[in-house]
Amino acid sequence: MIARMSTLRSLLVAACMLQAVPSFAADAIKVVTVAQGLVNPWSLAFLPDGRLLVTEKPGRIRIVEKDGKLGAPLAGLPAISVGGQCGLHDVVLDPRFADNNTIYFSFAEPAGTGESGNSTAVARARLSDGGLTDVRTIFRQRPKYSSSAHCGGRLVFARDGKLFLTLGDRFARKDDAQTLDNHHGKIVRIEPDGQVPKDNPFVGRAGALPETWSLGHRNVQGAALHPATGELWTHEHGPQGGDEVNVAEAGKNYGWPLLTYGRNYGIGTRIGEEGPKPGYEQPLKVWVPSIAPSGMAFLTSDRYPGWKGSLFVGALRAQMLARLTLDGRKVTGEERLLADLNERIRDVRQGPDGWLYLVTDSGNGRILRLER
Image 1 (spheres, rainbow, N blue to C red):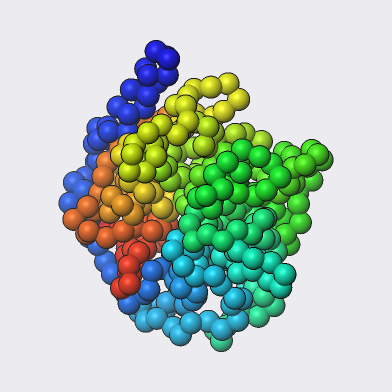
Image 2: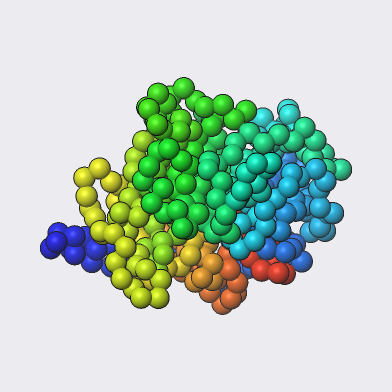
């Protein structure tokens, strides 16, 4: 018990640290509006010709021209279940997009014939200015469940061409995060055509869904590859506190809901243990109280002196951008930026030009570029 309390104190101290000193004044950042008038935009992708793809949670993908003009919603999307936290989510380009014009997007899929509920799914399609063609759903979270919460939905291509997808626990199904016969509270890894990679950690295990990469997650809405190691870094929402940053490794268990630094909403009672505990991974960082993290990007450019190598995390509840300084896997400090915007930051990306781009979540959402 003493060891757990000591660990918690250490994590809480780390969570509150604002000791990273930038090499230039943070107030020197110039916030440039690239586009506006979006309805709850969720994700951003950069096309080779300088245009942008942006998703809107109500079920639209738009092309943003170089001058910031919004294109009409692209035709061809499948049916999408929209409500609460769920709808159209992430969009990423195929690593060979220049050759095949293929994109991937995640979305809440409504029930089909003979089903009930909804679940997070992934589709691939060919992109043209007129819309999407050859649309095919390549993965569906199982089982479907009627919920408008905790859809997850981040997509990341690994260096080997495999595709990671983060999946929430659907809120009421939190205990499913600890069992392998479902996709709730999991990160999955699939081939670009939806097939199961033969080297996935649970392939061949009786009762386990073979797409599963890691388990014990609550609602992962940020994911990015580490630029040096190629590891999948993620962050996830805790309940009342307990947001986490993790490195998602094959076959590992991240504890939810057995281990968490969060508390039950409203009443503040304990949900599980605080760890550490053998067989479960400890977070690299926790936030108490919750900042509601969303979006994640490593900075690899030299655009911002002294910030190269930092990890940037958007925040919905805290309405700011967090810059985390790192020493290997150790989070050494946090700097909170852009709180004066008073906007929910949904996505964070580094553009091909080296600047950081943000997506703000509102009925008049914006795409922002941070310059200096």
